[in-house]
Image (cartoon, rainbow, N blue to C red):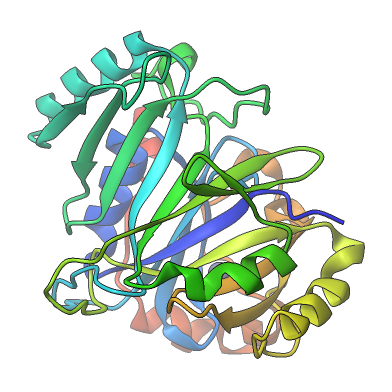
Length: 311
Ligand code: ZN
């Protein structure tokens, strides 16, 4: 039994429209679900991913309208690393991001043979890195008229969190099947793998807010999910019960260094309630919220998906 890499990463936005514009319009991801926060249906939960809404490429945002900017600190994910396939892709993104007034930093390969990387922040300060990575994992790419497939983002490669004493997490990570690799923890299943890395934290305390990561989810095969919950307990964590998120099932627990972990199933998937070709176009509500659709829609700020305008 193995976890299949990163399932999704969830962050916070205070500006839903600015968020949609950046992730779909600039980064070229596809909005694959426009729904509400299941714990507070008065605000959005927006999901971006590849063309098929695949786990492994799914960045999601809780909307807290007007939320103050946050700051990543101890126990928080501070950088999301995406795969690209070539140095040409780095050049393409440097130019494209620059054209949208996004400041970028070209990072030289850390070792001979390693790939270059480009670092930048989203409009609310969430840090991203595009890294040239050699892998046989299938590329998870979204279609965008201005982003050729050969330079597009190919899904998550790594997530990095701040921790002062990361050895505290070792036992739990090992119980969950993470294995050490060149200073990172690798989690790799049959289809896909990803990396989890701790960096020394800054002096300033973290503050959850706009532009910070809320949690990271690891991918489980449908049939293994209950067993992962038992493993998490065995590793010293205190997971929630299984929560049905409709598009997947989830458990949540805090790992010893402070990051909020989720283990989410690979299915049923985002096409369980709308056809693949129309993902993300309409507000979709899990069935239990459907009777309150009218009130819910009245509270939400209308947002426009630039993908629709580009077609
Ligand atoms: Zn989640």
